[in-house]
Amino acid sequence: MQEFEGIRLKGPWQAAEVVDFLEQERSPLRLALNGHDGFPLLASLWFRYAEGALWCVTHQDSLVVRRLAQDPRAAFEVSVSEPPYLGVRGQAAVERLPGQGQQELEAMLDRYLGGKDSKLARWLLSRADEEVALRIRPKWLTSWDFRERMSGS
Image (tube, rainbow, N blue to C red; front, side, top):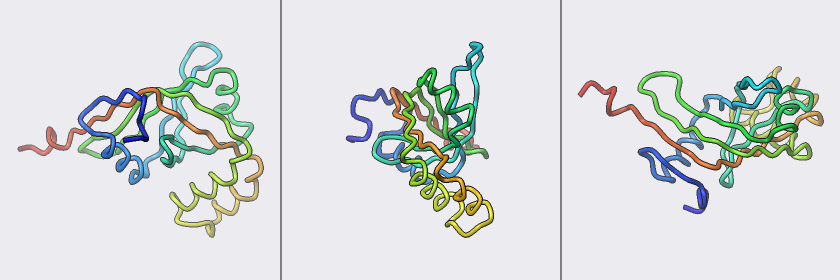
């Protein structure tokens, strides 16, 4: 599958299953960043999968953007919150794309809120020009799937 060409893929899922999961799952992506003091930082962000990358959006003044400006390396995880547990995690390089912030914000609002008509959506859109898109390009991915193990059979 072209999406993961050159990316080390491990775990029980084939590339098509990883893509299906990432396209369907609505739990936030957890993004681990390198803190300035050597301790890791963790941020939960809405995401979407497209063109071999995970996309997020955050405010230009966020700690996420500041830390990525210093060190674009990150780890990430997308997983379900309820048993049986399954998901995808990996390491990635993250690119900050200020010019695409509004476009990605609109995509996130459609994906997570079902549109742009809610109070939250209108507030986020009111500052859309201050949003930064994040393109997370995995270096490696691993999947896990405990459905069979946790089924009790």
